[in-house]
Length: 302
Image 1 (cartoon, rainbow, N blue to C red):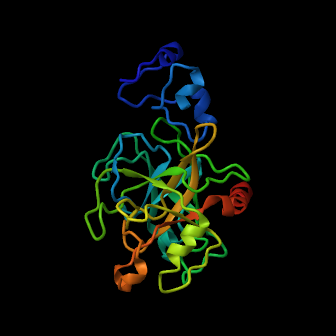
Image 2: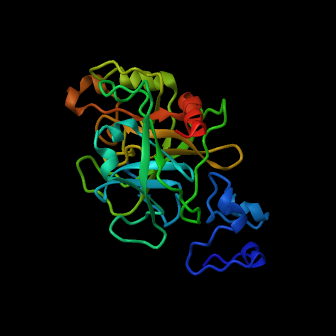
Image 3: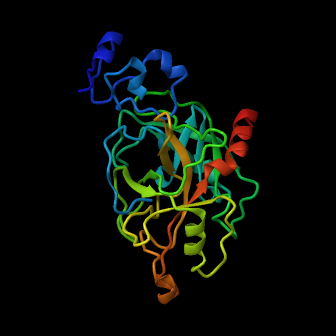
């Protein structure tokens, strides 16, 4: 149960572990705040690919969505407003995608139809103009404009976009989440998983990627992970979020899950390994680099 003093004062009822969002915040919710993260401080404190991670509780990532083609999950995404979702551009390459694409928010268990779920079709897909499928790790970001709007609740809320100039430095521990495989070529889970990963410096990122065959353009690349592997995103997590806690405590979309050499492979000693056995950090699209493009397209409405 989540009957806190604040909720009692507000006259809210919790029929389950997930409380309703106060009406005043349904229209203008604070981004990046989980209703479950309660505190006895103040009223507003209420809103105060995965290998080696763990299952999360329902509602732990209310901004996470599942992209579904013919009702089957294939990529993740992140709610940034009632009508906009951020995902990876490589998830949107199918020319006929719009005919069969739906976005489900409030999802936890892919095998169940949960009361928290909201599913909407997509009105338009906007890929970054510099995205090139021949070099799919660079500018790997797309915006989905929904045909309709999500109704915000405890299970469906937006993550924050970075503030202009906000950068999460090397060593910052952030969280990736999704329904991707639990190990390389392994099973797909039914429920949402998360994993904590440290951001790497651009120098360490470049050094690790230089051990791979093809030069990887790095305009938008952010790396996260552990040199000896063990924790990572994996197939099925693409397009989902890398979330970092900002200075004010809000969960901020720092990156979009893009690519990796295998899943959770270490990259130490890569040059001594045969190429198919080499590993890499997790590669994410750095939101701070593409933020002006995101904001411009969301404002334009398209």
